[in-house]
Length: 200
Length: 174
Ligand SMILES: [Zn+2]
Ligand SMILES: [Zn+2]
Image (cartoon, rainbow over all chains, first blue to last red; front, side, top):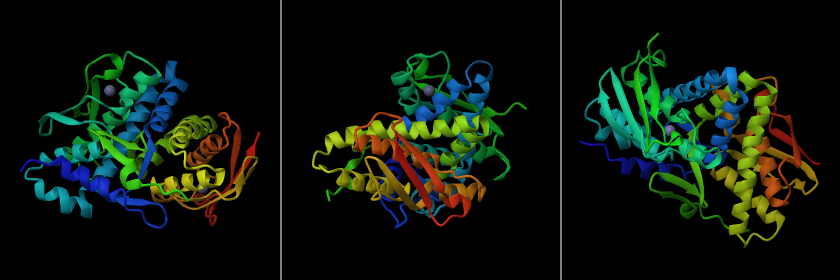
């Protein structure tokens, strides 16, 4: 059975409306927050600006790392959550279907219109996004640039492969890593993330 | 007070998600706390300042446009009440804004996303850690009282990340 993303979107939209008395949103095994994309974009791109020059590569690596660790822990929580068991699991037939479940949750979270373009088990994952909030934010506030700017999605793409084919949780984080060869922030028609086994 | 209809205000347009017309993203405590730790570890005080500034700027702009839409919120008191409702409904926690006016005051927060998230991931710390919330407060107050960015200084004098009973923020207008 194919994954019905709309069911997942619906569950997130309904679940994120449930507020407990402390103002915390517990959903899919994590605590969720809803913040303006401008907050995340300012944080990432100004962090990068501060490390401009010699430390530019460090900024990029740190932002991808923060997202990959998060994606790894988050989606591990998500795939073990009650909601996943109820809503997503019944739609999953193969291990590879999990990725479709992960991308549907990402879409529901407002991260962009993620589509899996290619998945070679253990080897390669290609995810395409035509409207990433990072690329859109970069274009709106900083203009066109020369390199991919979607550090959050890049880390998350690596984490998806870590969870499927890396060492057992929690030892598999960074077994895979992703590049972003195409990004709307550098004039490409879409962003594309390619995750492969890490080279080290 | 004016009700905020979360059912209709949290909306989608294709893959994008909006609250009251402003684009938002849902992220969990792993990401929010990872970003905070990365900035603090890499840049120290400058990273803390950036966390504050990013939240302040996003909130000042966001709430200014929100109050322009919600004309029925006429008094500063009702605007502050609404801001606290939105804070809670965004999953950030509970914040009491009653003790603050144009000049400043004291704000209490008995529970928060960042506190819960930080403690779950890293345990207690020995400095106050609610930089996001400080920036969030500054941005809201600037929008409510129509002040420029940087007008308010927010100091967190007690923090639950340090085992205090609640987070306490002292607000001073410049
Ligand atoms: Zn991109
Ligand atoms: Zn605190």
